[in-house]
Length: 193
Image (cartoon, rainbow, N blue to C red):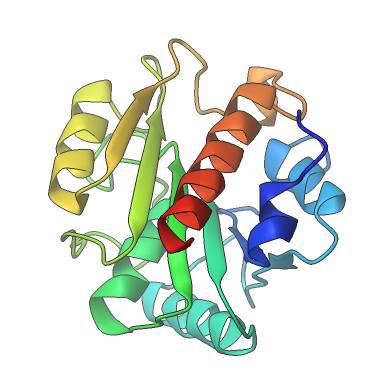
Protein backbone atom coordinates (compact mmCIF):
# COMPACT_ATOMS: atom_id res chain seq x y z
CA UNK A 1 0.00 0.00 0.00
CA UNK A 2 1.32 3.45 -0.85
CA UNK A 3 2.08 6.00 1.85
CA UNK A 4 -0.53 8.39 0.40
CA UNK A 5 -4.01 7.25 1.26
CA UNK A 6 -6.34 8.15 -1.65
CA UNK A 7 -9.19 8.61 0.82
CA UNK A 8 -7.32 11.34 2.64
CA UNK A 9 -6.10 12.91 -0.61
CA UNK A 10 -9.64 13.12 -1.90
CA UNK A 11 -11.11 14.07 1.46
CA UNK A 12 -13.90 11.62 0.75
CA UNK A 13 -15.76 9.96 3.58
CA UNK A 14 -16.12 6.19 3.25
CA UNK A 15 -19.67 5.25 4.23
CA UNK A 16 -20.01 1.60 5.18
CA UNK A 17 -23.33 -0.05 4.36
CA UNK A 18 -23.54 -3.53 5.91
CA UNK A 19 -26.06 -6.25 5.17
CA UNK A 20 -28.53 -8.17 7.27
CA UNK A 21 -27.17 -9.05 10.71
CA UNK A 22 -24.49 -6.34 10.42
CA UNK A 23 -20.81 -7.12 9.82
CA UNK A 24 -19.02 -8.74 12.74
CA UNK A 25 -15.56 -8.01 14.17
CA UNK A 26 -13.71 -10.24 11.67
CA UNK A 27 -15.50 -8.87 8.60
CA UNK A 28 -13.39 -6.82 6.17
CA UNK A 29 -15.89 -3.94 6.41
CA UNK A 30 -15.36 -3.69 10.17
CA UNK A 31 -11.59 -3.90 9.79
CA UNK A 32 -11.50 -1.21 7.07
CA UNK A 33 -13.80 1.03 9.11
CA UNK A 34 -11.35 0.79 12.03
CA UNK A 35 -8.46 1.76 9.71
CA UNK A 36 -10.20 4.74 8.11
CA UNK A 37 -10.47 7.37 10.83
CA UNK A 38 -13.10 9.56 9.17
CA UNK A 39 -15.36 6.79 7.92
CA UNK A 40 -19.03 6.43 8.81
CA UNK A 41 -20.97 3.28 9.66
CA UNK A 42 -24.65 3.32 8.72
CA UNK A 43 -26.64 2.02 11.68
CA UNK A 44 -30.09 0.45 11.43
CA UNK A 45 -32.87 0.18 13.98
CA UNK A 46 -33.20 -3.54 13.16
CA UNK A 47 -30.26 -5.48 11.80
CA UNK A 48 -31.99 -8.86 11.86
CA UNK A 49 -35.41 -7.96 10.41
CA UNK A 50 -34.71 -5.29 7.77
CA UNK A 51 -37.61 -3.41 6.24
CA UNK A 52 -36.73 -1.81 2.91
CA UNK A 53 -38.37 1.58 3.47
CA UNK A 54 -36.91 1.91 6.97
CA UNK A 55 -33.40 0.98 5.80
CA UNK A 56 -33.63 3.39 2.85
CA UNK A 57 -34.66 6.20 5.23
CA UNK A 58 -31.84 5.36 7.66
CA UNK A 59 -29.26 5.33 4.86
CA UNK A 60 -30.52 8.67 3.54
CA UNK A 61 -30.36 10.21 7.02
CA UNK A 62 -26.80 8.95 7.48
CA UNK A 63 -25.72 10.35 4.10
CA UNK A 64 -27.34 13.73 4.77
CA UNK A 65 -25.30 13.99 7.97
CA UNK A 66 -22.01 13.73 6.04
CA UNK A 67 -20.65 16.82 4.28
CA UNK A 68 -18.52 16.61 1.18
CA UNK A 69 -17.74 13.67 -1.11
CA UNK A 70 -18.81 10.21 0.02
CA UNK A 71 -17.85 6.76 -1.19
CA UNK A 72 -20.31 3.96 -0.41
CA UNK A 73 -18.76 0.64 0.66
CA UNK A 74 -21.58 -1.91 0.69
CA UNK A 75 -21.81 -5.63 1.32
CA UNK A 76 -24.63 -8.10 0.61
CA UNK A 77 -28.07 -6.60 1.35
CA UNK A 78 -26.27 -3.27 1.74
CA UNK A 79 -25.69 -3.38 -2.04
CA UNK A 80 -29.40 -3.81 -2.71
CA UNK A 81 -30.06 -1.01 -0.23
CA UNK A 82 -27.76 1.33 -2.16
CA UNK A 83 -29.68 0.68 -5.39
CA UNK A 84 -33.03 1.15 -3.63
CA UNK A 85 -31.83 4.41 -2.06
CA UNK A 86 -30.53 5.70 -5.42
CA UNK A 87 -33.92 5.02 -7.05
CA UNK A 88 -35.55 7.51 -4.64
CA UNK A 89 -32.85 9.94 -3.56
CA UNK A 90 -30.11 12.07 -5.00
CA UNK A 91 -26.93 13.15 -3.27
CA UNK A 92 -24.33 14.91 -5.40
CA UNK A 93 -21.80 14.11 -2.69
CA UNK A 94 -21.90 10.38 -3.44
CA UNK A 95 -19.04 10.04 -5.94
CA UNK A 96 -18.52 6.28 -6.05
CA UNK A 97 -19.62 2.91 -4.70
CA UNK A 98 -17.98 -0.44 -4.11
CA UNK A 99 -20.74 -3.07 -4.06
CA UNK A 100 -19.57 -6.47 -2.81
CA UNK A 101 -21.58 -9.73 -3.00
CA UNK A 102 -24.90 -8.33 -4.16
CA UNK A 103 -27.56 -10.95 -3.34
CA UNK A 104 -30.24 -12.24 -5.67
CA UNK A 105 -33.46 -11.13 -3.94
CA UNK A 106 -35.32 -13.90 -5.80
CA UNK A 107 -32.73 -16.56 -5.05
CA UNK A 108 -33.44 -19.55 -2.79
CA UNK A 109 -31.05 -18.38 -0.04
CA UNK A 110 -32.38 -14.80 0.23
CA UNK A 111 -33.43 -14.27 3.88
CA UNK A 112 -37.19 -14.23 4.45
CA UNK A 113 -36.68 -11.74 7.29
CA UNK A 114 -35.86 -9.01 4.76
CA UNK A 115 -39.15 -7.29 3.92
CA UNK A 116 -39.83 -5.17 0.83
CA UNK A 117 -36.67 -6.01 -1.10
CA UNK A 118 -38.41 -8.42 -3.48
CA UNK A 119 -38.99 -5.90 -6.28
CA UNK A 120 -35.61 -4.20 -6.64
CA UNK A 121 -35.38 -0.97 -8.60
CA UNK A 122 -32.21 -1.66 -10.56
CA UNK A 123 -31.13 1.14 -12.89
CA UNK A 124 -28.00 2.90 -14.07
CA UNK A 125 -26.41 4.45 -10.98
CA UNK A 126 -25.41 8.13 -11.18
CA UNK A 127 -21.96 7.53 -9.68
CA UNK A 128 -18.98 5.35 -10.52
CA UNK A 129 -19.71 1.82 -9.34
CA UNK A 130 -17.66 -1.35 -9.03
CA UNK A 131 -19.58 -4.55 -8.35
CA UNK A 132 -17.49 -7.38 -6.89
CA UNK A 133 -18.77 -10.94 -7.24
CA UNK A 134 -17.66 -14.44 -6.28
CA UNK A 135 -18.11 -17.49 -8.49
CA UNK A 136 -19.60 -19.52 -5.61
CA UNK A 137 -21.68 -17.00 -3.65
CA UNK A 138 -24.58 -18.91 -2.05
CA UNK A 139 -26.72 -15.75 -2.08
CA UNK A 140 -26.41 -15.00 -5.78
CA UNK A 141 -25.17 -16.84 -8.86
CA UNK A 142 -22.41 -15.18 -10.85
CA UNK A 143 -24.86 -14.77 -13.74
CA UNK A 144 -27.01 -12.64 -11.43
CA UNK A 145 -24.01 -10.42 -10.69
CA UNK A 146 -23.30 -10.07 -14.41
CA UNK A 147 -26.87 -8.97 -15.08
CA UNK A 148 -26.92 -6.58 -12.12
CA UNK A 149 -23.63 -4.97 -13.18
CA UNK A 150 -24.95 -4.42 -16.71
CA UNK A 151 -28.19 -2.89 -15.43
CA UNK A 152 -26.42 -0.66 -12.91
CA UNK A 153 -23.76 0.51 -15.36
CA UNK A 154 -21.14 -0.94 -13.00
CA UNK A 155 -17.74 -2.45 -13.63
CA UNK A 156 -17.86 -6.14 -12.68
CA UNK A 157 -14.90 -7.67 -10.86
CA UNK A 158 -14.73 -11.47 -10.62
CA UNK A 159 -12.76 -12.46 -7.50
CA UNK A 160 -12.99 -16.22 -8.07
CA UNK A 161 -14.42 -18.58 -5.46
CA UNK A 162 -14.70 -16.56 -2.23
CA UNK A 163 -18.17 -17.59 -1.10
CA UNK A 164 -20.21 -14.62 0.14
CA UNK A 165 -17.04 -12.53 0.55
CA UNK A 166 -17.64 -12.19 4.27
CA UNK A 167 -15.95 -13.24 7.51
CA UNK A 168 -16.80 -16.91 6.81
CA UNK A 169 -14.63 -16.59 3.69
CA UNK A 170 -11.60 -16.10 5.97
CA UNK A 171 -10.46 -12.94 4.19
CA UNK A 172 -9.32 -10.88 7.17
CA UNK A 173 -8.82 -7.30 6.01
CA UNK A 174 -9.17 -8.55 2.40
CA UNK A 175 -6.30 -6.72 0.72
CA UNK A 176 -7.62 -7.49 -2.79
CA UNK A 177 -10.85 -5.66 -2.01
CA UNK A 178 -9.04 -2.80 -0.32
CA UNK A 179 -6.91 -2.39 -3.45
CA UNK A 180 -10.11 -2.20 -5.51
CA UNK A 181 -11.42 0.54 -3.23
CA UNK A 182 -8.15 2.47 -3.36
CA UNK A 183 -8.01 2.18 -7.17
CA UNK A 184 -11.61 3.36 -7.43
CA UNK A 185 -10.88 6.38 -5.27
CA UNK A 186 -7.64 7.18 -7.09
CA UNK A 187 -9.43 7.05 -10.46
CA UNK A 188 -12.21 9.29 -9.16
CA UNK A 189 -9.75 11.77 -7.70
CA UNK A 190 -7.81 11.80 -10.96
CA UNK A 191 -11.00 12.62 -12.87
CA UNK A 192 -11.48 15.72 -10.71
CA UNK A 193 -7.89 17.04 -11.03
